[in-house]
Image (cartoon, rainbow, N blue to C red):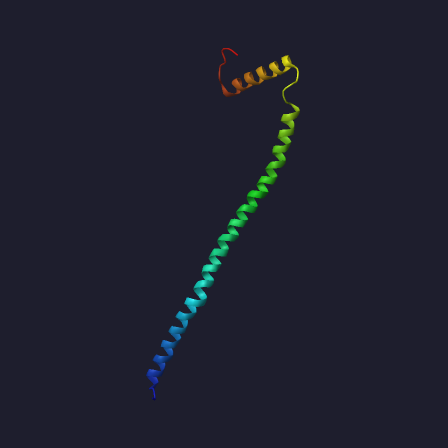
Length: 103
């Protein structure tokens, strides 16, 4: 079977289109899907790493504040502890704008 020049061009064009569709179906689309999935996983991992580094940075400040709170904790003497609690309640009321009528 001898093909004319026009039929040969049509056959080559059809073959090229079929080859491009096959490449797209089996190579390009899976690669693009995998790339999008990997990009989202990388973004999630970066978010987790940033969160962890913020947690470590905050832990230093929180531990320092906790140490200060322990050092300035409630006294062991009953009257000193009562005085300290009353002072804290009055300070809280003053800062928040509340009026305490009786304690």
